[in-house]
Length: 61
Image (tube, rainbow, N blue to C red):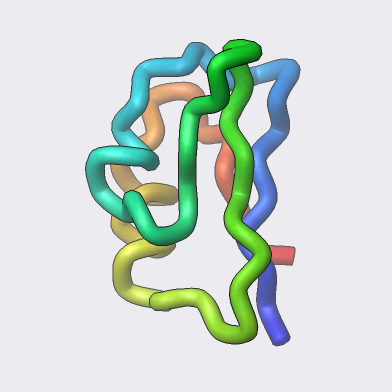
């Protein structure tokens, strides 16, 4: 199964991933993006997050 990953060192915390795919991405109170632990990820939502990320720091693993 493919899993989305975020390169935290490149992330600018813009929040677009959380806006586009709130079931997958969440900006924590500590100031970093967390990826939800899901059995299956909504590919279309994750692909939109990848496409719209200005830091280009989201990918499938």
